[in-house]
Image (cartoon, rainbow, N blue to C red):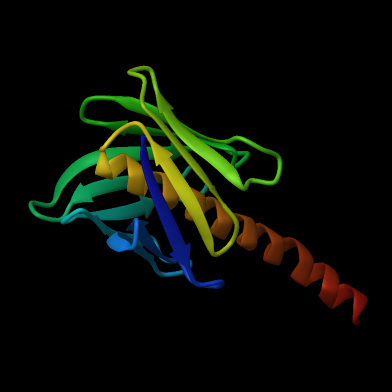
Length: 163
């Protein structure tokens, strides 16, 4: 079992990933951007999101700009499917507080994530760097979408109360 830690700034989309005390990766996601960059164990990836109502994220290998996979999201922001060249894994929240989530595949792949807004852990039975990074990406995507929904709902309510 591989055990990693992650940290990020409170209002940041930038994650640092550690194995022991050594930083082995990072995910840099500009808030509300349609593009994020990540690297882990010397491999670099780009996540590009497209679409409006039914968004999808394509993942590219930065060394040759080859598409490696695609993430599709469900409408309730609780699940996602990651399809790569050789397998399909399912992402989901594991508790009601959205502080635990996982990626799992029919091939026995299991990656468990836990954490709050600025730090957490990753336990994995695979060395698949793309999957390890993608699990954090999906979580950050859903946190951003939740913030968008909250702003869309509460700003008009707050404005109407103050008028």
